[in-house]
Amino acid sequence: SAVISQKPSRDICQRGTSLTIQCQVDSQVTMMFWYRQQPGQSLTLIATANQGSEATYESGFVIDKFPISRPNLTFSTLTVSNMSPEDSSIYLCSVRLVGNEQFFGPGTRLTVL
Amino acid sequence: SQQGEEDPQALSIQEGENATMNCSYKTSINNLQWYRQNSGRGLVHLILIRSNEREKHSGRLRVTLDTSKKSSSLLITASRAADTASYFCAPLYDKVIFGPGTSLSVIP
Image (cartoon, rainbow over all chains, first blue to last red; front, side):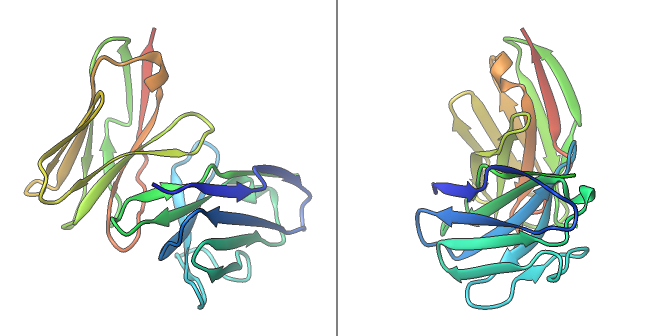
């Protein structure tokens, strides 16, 4: 398995501000992903974080709103920009190991006022 | 669509009973994973079953995979109140897309 940590675990932010979420894995992984889970909903894939190149975004998500960095094989950040109350969600980092098992971090609970 | 579809969407049972959840998917896969999410918590990886496996066990969990029918099932035996959670199947393609899940309530 993999040990995944996220910072912060939760935050309350004001409308119009930005928040950067960090994801750290205890081993090198090829594939990292970012998901969002809105209240009462299932998980939605935001993007695949590619090491050394631009992230691959899913339909409905754009780089200007959710810029992602992946400087190495153990770390990634997701920024939620110009936040609105609709961005209130749990944001989860996920990694896929060589055997294709995919694990999730504990999540970052974001509330936008 | 690359997501799995869980059925039923909600299930309520008495403690000690068995719970069965089903998953269907559209196109061929190499493997499929099941996850549990307790209310407000992160996703816990339960089990991965590969396309060349028909059945896999882990403790009180039994997962089956029928690639000809493009379906999988998760059986939880002798359920406990702590099993109350949402359960998701995740057929593996280049990315994992989640369906609505099955919300399981185990009544003490």
